[in-house]
Image 1 (spheres, rainbow, N blue to C red):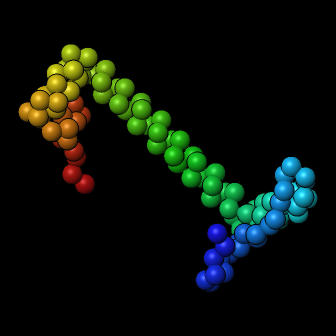
Image 2: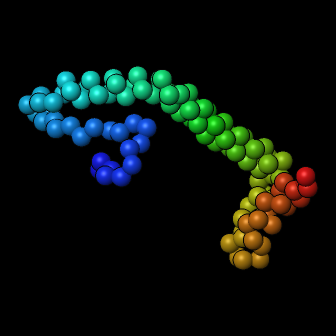
Image 3: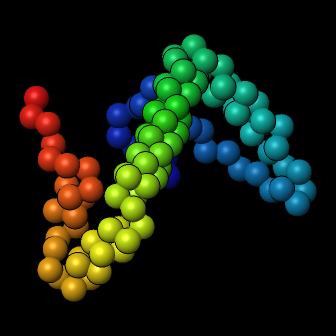
Length: 106
């Protein structure tokens, strides 16, 4: 929905299109191209690329760290901790600390 408040840096236009009849498609494509030019001029592509890289790196780091921690603890220990959590004898945070060791203080 188009905002009635203050104008943002890029104000998306409201365009009428009818895909089945091809109405408004040329205008839509023109506005998409204009937005691409605006993003390039204002660093939008770079910000998005950096955010995608941050998310991808974070996901890979978390996955690999978890795999290494499980391998170091061993499958039997991991299963024992899972059961202890399920039985409410151990909270998940304490179980993670059991596997990784205590956090280093800065």
